[in-house]
Image (cartoon, rainbow, N blue to C red; front, side, top):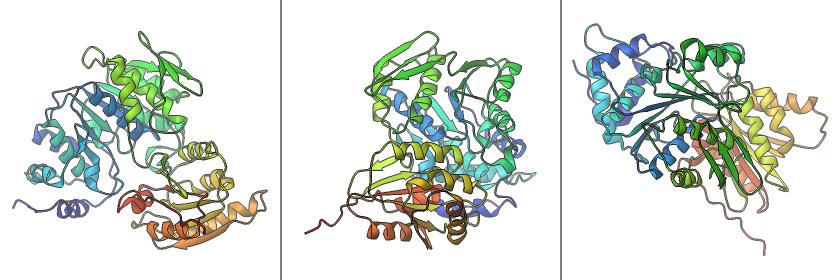
Length: 439
């Protein structure tokens, strides 16, 4: 009997219940359903894998495509507040109503004999890809959920693979070191197709895999590179240069590496997807992505960042350091228990004066009290003997409101960690802080 639901929330609840495992790596089941759906893309596909920088890279690819007059579609995950954020067509987030027929179509073919069980991610990915495949796109931009080789997005053959920075994350699923993790990410590459590696020091496994399958490998520092001063930056590829560009609208030093990979992808695809220098300049200058070193002006200053592994925390720490002096930095932090939390706390710790640890609405999350005890252990071993206040809260918004109450107008509040942490603070929109001025 065909299952039918009237709302997206009902479908998502259904997707959470039909498969025994939350994460179930492998393409056999999802490919079988995709075959039943006759899922095909009639436009170039760019697939983006990596530990950090995937979302920023997808946003820049999209922004340049829009400025070039194309109709791009983007699949990205996870979302910050609303599920619909995972799918954008022509720069707009799709509506829940637009997604419903695609959930219905996936369910109808999934239930055909023999019935196929799908995880939440597999089911929702199929529904979104079906929508995108029918949206008359000029280019489809797909962000890998986890890894690459066995991720549901990899059922689609890419026309251009981009591998962003690779670091230690999800080691229980992807392997114990950068080499094994790199091998998993490299699985999105295809023979004879461009494979852009924007990690400046990629694992050898990525290079070896590209060469073993005959991919057209573009390496940072060899096939493309950038340089910059305080005012502007320039980029050079195999046959094209861009000079005197304004910095990308996404803040942080790591964004130039991401932008370089984007420009390499467009150079590699220039026969099928030509873009002008003006589209590149305008796209990078106007790109937006919530929660990636997002600075919200106000009193106190507010920084939102979904940094949740050691590599991303190192970038966040450098970016916070470059912001200049603030009397007090208040940090709202919540993260998953499978993350390497101690080095993260150790890295950013010297910049934080007050911690607001929070619980998150998922079983995978580390409890606020456990985050607090991990911080206490780190602080005890550090050579800094300054006083650092800590407190625990039941959710991100409660922690954020406590930080706002405690912060002076010249302070800054940094909300970081899991998507749940940043999303919990953004659930009613971007907070605009306007401190009560002293009489």
